[in-house]
Structure formats: C-alpha cells, structure tokens
Amino acid sequence: MKINILILVTLFFISNLNLIHAQDLKFYGKLEPGNLIIVKGDLIKRARLDTLELKIDNDGIFCFGFDLSERGSKILNVKFKDGKVLLKKIELLPRKFKVQRINNLKKDLVTAPRKLNKRIEKERQIAYEARSPIGKIDTAFYKTGFVRPIKGGRITSVFGSQRILNGIPKNKHNGLDIAVPRGTPVYAMAAGIVRLAADNFYYPGNYILLDHGQALNSQYLHLSKMLVKTGDRVKKGEKIGEVGTTGRSTGPHLHWGVQWYLRRVDPAGLLTMGFPDN
Image (cartoon, rainbow, N blue to C red; front, side, top):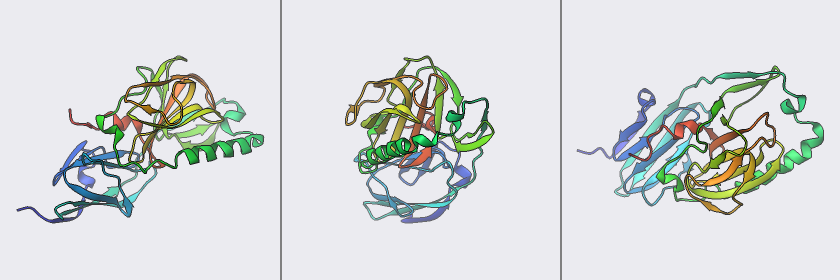
C-alpha cells in the first residue's frame, strides 16, 4: 500500500549516494554544501525548497543547489498531481575544503587599487542586471547533461579552497581553474542562453555568463576571445570562446564557475552525478 505522506525523512545517512530513489522520484547529486541536486519524476505538480518555489520542466525535471557555506536543515516539499506529498528533511553538515596559499603576487593582484573602485562597482552592476532573467525559465536546458568546458588541462585550483594571497585570507574559490595554453577552445557545459558576454572586466576579464534554465548558470572567465554575444542560444559542447589571461589572472587558464541563483556549486560535481541516466 502506498503511503500518501512521507514526513521529515532524514537523508544524512544516504547523502553520499549519487542516485537516490524516493517514491517516484530520482535524485542525482550529493546532498551537501556546494552541490547541485537534480530531481526527475512523473506527474509533479509543484516543488519547494523551504519557501522557494522551484521551476519544473515539462519532462518532470527540476533542480536546486546548496552554497558552499550553507549549513542546517532544509525541507524539500514535492506535491504530485494525484494529491500525494513527499517531504524530505536535508541536513547540511560542514564540508571541509582545501587551503591554497599563493605568495609573491603583485599587490594589485591581491587588493584592487582604490582608484578602480568605481569601475569595479559599475561592472558588478552590469553583471547583476544581466542576471535578472535567471531563475525565470521553467525549461531545463541542461536536461541532456553536462560536458567539461576544456579538453585536458591541469587543475590549478579546486572549488571551495580557502585562498590566502601574500598571507591575506581571501574568499573561498567559487569555481574550478584549469590551466591550458592561450587559445585553447572553451565549450558550453550545457545548452543555454548567453546572458552576458563581458568585455575586459577588472576581475574576470573577458567572460561569458550562460543561463541553463531553472536558475542554473555557468561562467567562463579570463577569455582571450569570445565567440558568442548576449542573447545567443548555445548547444551543449558548442565552442563559445578561447582561453586567455585577461582580468586578474597570473597565467592562461579557464575559471569555470557554476551557480544556482547565486549559490556557488562545485562544477566537478556535475560531471560525476550520473545525470541523465546512461
């Protein structure tokens, strides 16, 4: 006999499973800070994470993510078209990240000169406005899965690492750095819409912001060349630019960042979550 309501099922003991079966839902991803979770099911009427209404694709796909610094309890509430409800309590425990110390950097690579404050603030405002459509699309453009935006290369900085520059603690690294030669092709990790193709911003240099639907978005920083413009539609694996060292960068590399809304999630986790089913 099917149970109509499942209340407060704690997922701590299965948080490291890549695929979780719950009623008629499949969960992909690790239930821990800094990760994206994708859910797929049939006849879903609505879904909420705490009080936030989640976007649901026509194929019954939705996603949500946890910032690398999030802690505490979250409640996922899914209602089906037959009236059944699934409630899940998710406990976010502290996650350990690496510490990365970089010394002998030029002073302006550690702290931006005051004279550039207005420029930096203007660029932040442009990026903020470009993000305004993100989270308003029901369609999961990412439903065909994800690809690594760089073929090969060396990982020089991992997601979540605490950066200490010339002895000064900075923010945790919110992406994945891949060192490759200048001009190496950069590919879209999933299908989406270009929300911003930014030209020579102070920190990220030339960079691209892609909207993959349902608030999932990705960024590609320090490019030498951009091959798309704001408003373009791109396919998964489409070439969108080339690696460079523009902005605050010490050498040719791609900074690959992924967020759900503004919650920072680990790009590497997208490639190992098993979505979609093979």
